[in-house]
Length: 513
Image 1 (cartoon, rainbow, N blue to C red):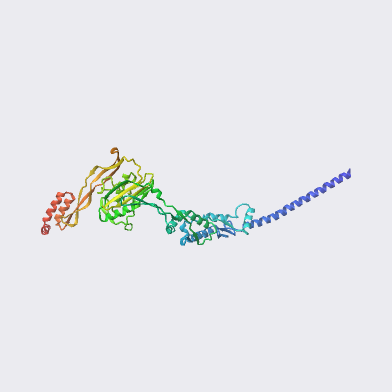
Image 2: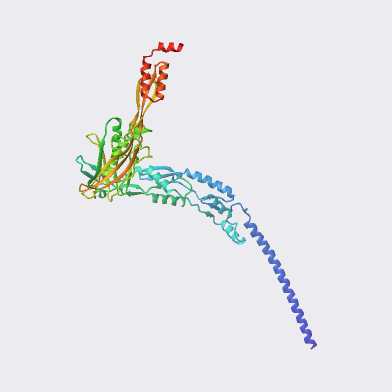
């Protein structure tokens, strides 16, 4: 029994020795691991932190620019300089045998967000676990990391550029149009197809090139040409067979005649498709010598003043009256400030510097054609053609009615440059009026409706009589100026008669006294 007990104690002591040995080995292993791991971690940490937090790692590019070792500020400055230089890059647009030299900035060139790209470049390899950062930075030793730039261009600016410099080199489409024979019959002339630049393809080509392998250098671009259809074809005009409405006024003569001829010539041949509007101002302006106009006269602040294009209102007025007989839609119309002598009140349509326009609209489902001329009888004539859809037994008339009048006054003014007592009539006397225009519809000659079509207000303009005071004696001039101030014609005549009989000697004697 003692022997067995002794063997058990010996075995227990051996087990305890082995356990202590294993514990010692474990501790030594942990210590060794910690030493090795600590050294490895330190090495790993040193590796990933070898580039400062605000500095971009090696082998990083933004587009084609190597930004390695730069701070964010330095990268932004370098990229900004590159963008500025890029705007001046020459782009050669090749159009068949023609070369059109442009600059990239003319394309509405826009760079990517430089600040954002620089920020991304700085942060690369600086975020995530130590091991993840290590793998990213290790990869940079063999492979560059490239942040892609996305460049854009402005489609509208490219279109403007092509319209200005490329399209004029191509054959433009020609709309079908109408000519009028002397007997009033109409001829239809065929349309012609043309060419234009395919803007969508051009924009895509530029964008693809900039965001492809562009080295920030000059480059060439082949423009794509496509067929352009005319807006109006002969088939559209086949229904223009009838006269819908017409009107004429006396063209007169002088400089004004030239302006009437020029203005009506710009309206002649206009075709309005269904629903389309016409602005007389946009069609006939600018009123300059270069555009065929001469100096005429116009109303301004109740006076007749010199004005280039003076008389264009008679053109718009004649068109207005033809349009209302054709029953086109009147979109915008203004009366003159004072009545005119070529139509009755409320039948006029004034044009003034773009702020007063006459605009009309084609309300029909078929086109209308405007013909205008000064004919052999010196009549300014406008005829509107289209497809007559109104009942044959229906006619329209327009009647001007004056509601009230305000007679003009006479104003007397002294003129020290006119001989004493001489009178000079100036101003442009006009009676003020309130008027309206009635539209009257007849069927089979019987009135079926009578409606107010427009109302118009015309200002009065006083007559001015200037009375000379030059050469009169001091007392006579005083007497005449007093009478003028009182605006009393009888007193004015008396002062003139009395002053005309006085001599300069009488005045000197009176003065000496």
